[in-house]
Amino acid sequence: MTEQVMIQVRFKEKVNINGVDTEYNDALYFTQAEYSVKTQIEIDTLKQERIDNWANVVKNPPPYVAPTKGELQIQKVDLEAQLAEVNTKLLTAK
Image 1 (cartoon, rainbow, N blue to C red):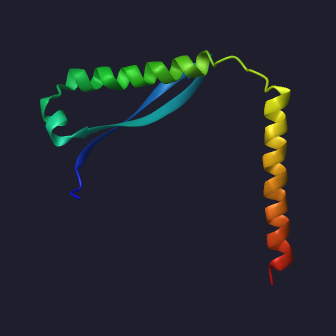
Image 2 (spheres, helix red, strand yellow; image 1 turned 135 degrees about the horizontal axis):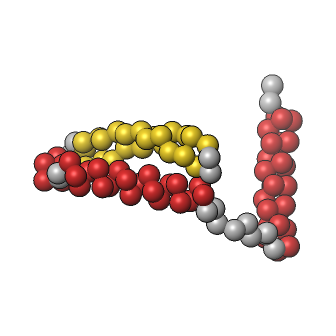
């Protein structure tokens, strides 16, 4: 298996979200072939799309959907199984 060398373009941008300045950090990854044909304008456009998408999600989070009773019951069973496993490990630990 050959490893593929990737070009990483790291960037950070100060973004104002609902009156609060915050910093967005990200990176774009390209193969050498992809990177060699990209213009700086195209790279800047990709960066801005990532920033805009992130800001949109932060400003407009998806609505909270409460779990159903059935979903909560499944979570309870899973947690009880995990607790039993931990208790078993505690009892057998030296």
